[in-house]
Length: 242
Image (cartoon, rainbow, N blue to C red; front, side, top):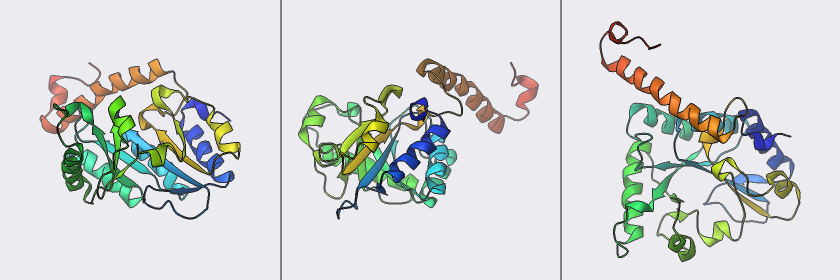
């Protein structure tokens, strides 16, 4: 089973494998009872459009997950029509929108991180059209990883509850740090917490370098489409093939 191929087909097979091993899919708010549970966490670092492709796979399988969106990023604008439409579609499919918080914007150790997260969550809620009730940390510092922050009204997906008490698996840098199939099938873990990055997944199997090269090249296409929508008769000035 090519789960480590980072293709959409492999992703669908990963969802099936989790289900076949007796896990029910849940979120950060429904963690009670003795059932085997799996939380799916998507950190949307770059290609927000890929969220729709994974979100649709999950929707068709009756699965809901959480998509964590960066507010401060050069990769996408959460208030653009394109992004708002994506957030709306994900939520129509039953997925939750969470805040992917980038702490590098904290300029002073004395700044109240909870206050900053609540402020960003409020802004993201305007784009999502719904209250933001969960946060994941983008590239958390050692201090953040060790602090086990608790926020009033907002679940911290990086807390010891979700990283320590659940079996934590991640596809960071397009590499599973351990065999994800073995972990799911072993029967050793009551609860799973799986972090995924939608930008890694493609139709065909790619290396990390090929994936990133494709992302860079796609930026030219996206900018041409933007200019075409905003400059009359762009084709007469600059042909898309150029």
